[in-house]
Every structure is written in C-alpha cells, then in structure tokens.
Length: 277
Figure 1 (cartoon, one colour):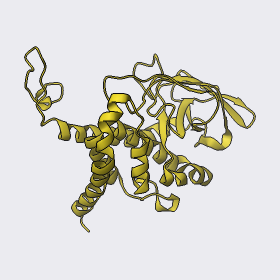
Figure 2 (figure 1 turned 90 degrees about the vertical axis):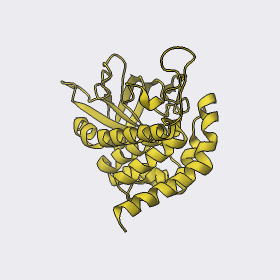
Figure 3 (figure 1 turned 90 degrees about the horizontal axis):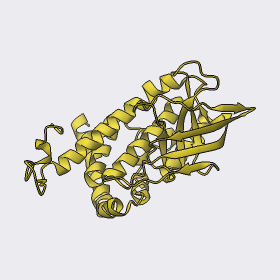
C-alpha cells in the first residue's frame, strides 16, 4: 500500500470517530469546560490513543505521520480534545522510548483501555522555557520526594499519570534534570482552576505537587538524563502534535468569515489576519 493510501486510511478512520463522537460534544466541552474523557475513550477503543506504542504493548505501532494526521483530524472536531490527545501521546511515547519493560507493562498496556497520560513540565518564573525548572527533587532511600508548582499542565487533575520533569537531586546546572512517572491518584497532587477564553476542556491549569512520593521504579531513565529525554523524547512529539492540531483547526475554521462589531477587521477571514499568515 502506498504512503498516500495509508494516510487516507488513517484520516478516514479518525474522521469517522470525530464525526460520530468528538464533534457532537465539542460545543458543550468548550462552553462548560468539560474534560473530554469520553472522546479519548472512543479513540482508545480503536487503538488511536496508542498510535505510536508498539503492538507488543497494546498499541497500533504506527509512525509520526499517522499521529500527525490523527491530531489534525481531531482538532477539526474539538481543539480541547486534540490538545489532550497530543499531550497523552507524547507522555506515552516518552515512556516507550525511555521506560523499562516494567514501566511499559504498567503504564502503556492500559492505554488501550483508556488510561490517559500527560506532561507536567513548565514552571512559573522561567520565561516560557518549559524545559527549565526551578524545582528540585529530593531523595529518601528508594523513594523520591517531589515538590513543585507547575504553571501549565494539560489534563491537570484528570490524567491517570503524569510524566513529570524537575531538577535532579543536587543539580549543579539547569540541564541536570530528571523525569518521573507519577500516578495521578497519588496524595499531594493539587490541581488549580482552569478557565480560559477557549479550549476550556483541556484543563491546562496550574498544578501543585506537595511531598509526592515516587518509588525509584518510576524514575524514567537515569538521573540527569532529562536533557536527552527533552530533546529526543518530548520535543518531537510535542512539536509535531501541536503543529498538526493547529493546522487541522485552521483548515476547519479559516474559511468561515469572522467579523467584529467594530474596527477594520469586519468580515475578514481568520486566514487573512497578518498574525495568522
């Protein structure tokens, strides 16, 4: 089968889910700030929550093209669902790339049944550099103690697991960071309020971790390996996914006239705004 035929098949499969499940809920999700769990469960039912996860661990074992197509099609129906989806796929892919078999068994295999993950990385007062952390993890025997206030975490308070980034114990430089997998039911996880102008269903609000204990078995990779994980694990999926989602959203909405009650932009297309071009 040709690449074009593959892409069409991916698009048709995801589009059917979007038209029957995702799009009908989009208005309510954005108006009421409802987390789109049912949409993610529908995608999981057909394997798309595990688009990059190998078949060995219950996923579809597809490539980044399939992921890009899926993110774009989902965004056409519901931007909130697309952002939750992108962060989930990214978190799962990071575990796939840097996790051990025990972690993959515990965190990736249940994805097919609807388990939702996300990234928890960015912190306040870091100038928008989401890879830069002020927090630093502590160590107590076989456990790590996490204290941090994250500024934006998609699916905050809703995710089943968080791929969490922080400075390593005794870090000497900003790039000395480590990653951990945190069970979303752990005590000490305190999500904040999310009330945005749009995409109100993705719950990308602040979240605080207060003395959250994580066993060493859920450290992702080695201590201090975070820079490599950011560059080769987090960033590719993050950038491909967000770019694809907003391209999909634009294709769906930029052809609709968008008018303002006053000013020179009355009746112009969104695609006509200089900032969009």
